[in-house]
Length: 314
Image (cartoon, rainbow, N blue to C red):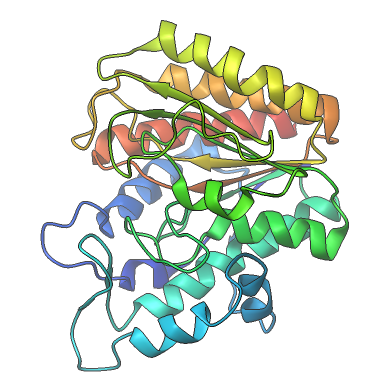
């Protein structure tokens, strides 16, 4: 089996406005690097508009959130609409957001049906800041939390894990998983930094494992935190499915934070998570793009991440 890449041209139509760091050029930079011959064996699929997308979204965003966001979105000719200080919707955002969710759902289906070894979802808008009833931090729907809940609801995965190495804490995923002992959330992130959550004492029902890092931390501290605060409890949790919130803004060149990682560090973290998946979950891994705002650093980091996924699938 090989690795599947799921993306879609509509993700470029999610217009966040001039000078916004979460911009379409991020995906163009990734497209360029993943177009090299070394990635010719990637199986490429388009993110779908699924008939069950609202039902799946409401697994993680219950109540009226879907309808409220649908009502808030701008229609043709209405320009951009600010959802909060950081989060913008354009005419193209709704389709992009629904296809980003659809990418995660298709990825789960492919992996659970053993049609592929693992999947990387190259999507935008990102998702891990979106709480159950609140869009924030560039995020509209929590793509990975939805996919995790779908893996359980549709495919019977009993213990589902999300590991997040984005430099910003995934407050949304934490909030959605908070009281569910069978949903594991582990995060390395810079602190203090937006969104201000992710302290060691935020533990949910024993299922939340935060590993805050300080500005200037590099490989040694990252690896120590990842081993002690993420990998050790993750092995104890013994997940049926491993999801990766793959943000690459902990790179030393990223303009929005101050962690000093390089591409090799993301490769190492990916390898370690694949080892967990091989041991506990039959190798089932879905990775979804989150942050990363220096275009060169993002493209190079995604490149090693995807190559590591591909090597695990051969």
